[in-house]
Image 1: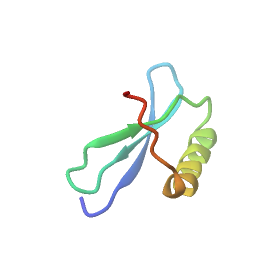
Image 2 (image 1 turned 90 degrees about the horizontal axis):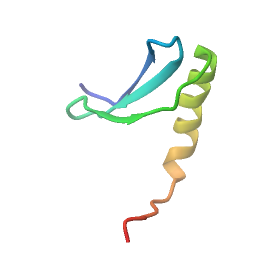
Image 3 (image 1 turned 90 degrees about the vertical axis):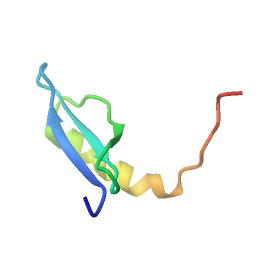
Length: 62
């Protein structure tokens, strides 16, 4: 896999969600919440693309 990708999936209860796969080995590195509509899921992907680059890391393990 040459680049990361988002996969839109439909769960057994009919709701939509997405997985983000890594570019290296294609492993799932993030899974979204459930969305009632496919459009809502697509909006979630857009939000991650827009907001993640500026996100900070908060370590809550301490």
